[in-house]
Amino acid sequence: MIQNANRQIRLKQRPDGIAGPDNFEEAVEPLRQPEDGELLVESIYLSIDPAMRVWIDENPGYVPAVEIGSVMRAGGVGRVLESRVPGFAPGDYIQGRLGWQTHPTITAEGTHKLDLSLGSLEDWIGPLGTTALTAWFGIRDVGALSADDFVLVSGAAGGVGQMAGQFAKLEGCRVVGVAGGPEKCRYLTDELNFDAAIDYKAEADLATAVASAFPEGVDLFFDNVGGEILEAALLHLRSKGRIVMCGRISQTAAEERYGVTNTGLLIGKRARMQGFIVSDYNGRYDEARQWISKKLKSGELKQRLHVLDGLEAAPDGLSMLFRSQNTGKLVVKVADA
Image (tube, rainbow, N blue to C red; front, side):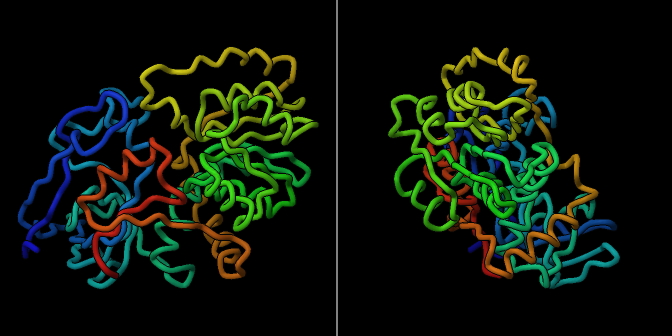
């Protein structure tokens, strides 16, 4: 291992379709000592999220694009090595925008010290991190979750989906998850206690599968996928139903996008479909984390991490998301805690 160096993975070229190793390149730079207001950090875990594919488009829409030649943007948890920020000391564990690099020097803005009384480092990259917060605010605030809802979750074996479904189950809802393959579906029903699972890879007609799972219709659809499953959920949405638009992973890197044709059903059903960004709720993160921490400690809430080893695995990890090759929250382990 190179001493006193920061290994990085930078964006080499914008992808056409699924992003992977060909779109990135490795680089090595000397460690940069922090100036006032900065921290030198050793990355431990880096998050791999579907939104990252959007960030490397020419025009992501809601955030600036990652520039060609820049370190790939990513959140993560790490250990402070040197600090020029009051309140942060060497040895503190932090969460922040670390990027795909081993030893970033970052500003304190958007960085916070981890409260390890709430959970472990693995909890902080998983169920206490922004993935679970996305599920929390998406299904509870945007989706207006109530105990008698019939809830459908797409991408249910992924980082956000598994948490959204569990939050609904803890409220007493009937919850059905959509995932790819029998192993993922068994994980939802056997380990996370979903009432049922739909294997989209095995179903000839998703609309028929949704109708079978919900003979009386769907009250709340938490959508991470878009495309055909969104159309099927719209078809079976109950009066005053809600659709939470969290992601559209099936369409983000698709060669040909699926044209949903039945959004007009929202009118007669008096239903709504709403998107959101988790950072809209950053003033309420602690509220959610306190609740999640209690449920983790009681064993009522679980999250599986799918861990890849080494910074160099990050580009492969991004492509895995879009090939449905992960079960659980996908992260890269860069260093030991």
